[in-house]
Image 1: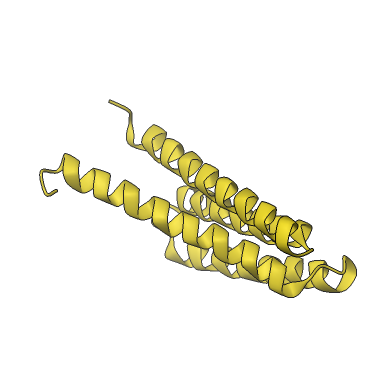
Image 2: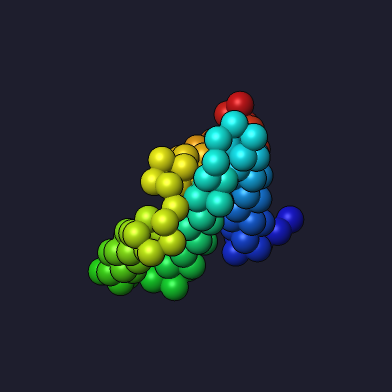
Length: 126
């Protein structure tokens, strides 16, 4: 049986791979139907970085809620700054970028639900 930290690492990696798969599939669909697949990849990668940072923040902060809130605020501001950079400096399409963000978040929530249901089955609840 894996330790709690090792199990969390495996779960976060699986969530990141789910996000990566969803973003690549949506970018391929956008590439075939429209233009702006790079913007989908950009938005999806930003969301994956945010997911990874949440995991790292929780590990670093531990029970320190003030530090966790500060890290969440920094992450939010950096995310908005990166989105603005993509739109204004790189000239990426906002709708395609939002598509990448949405696909990555949907994949993350779907993967989290699967992990939760697997844990419930292990507890004899499923």
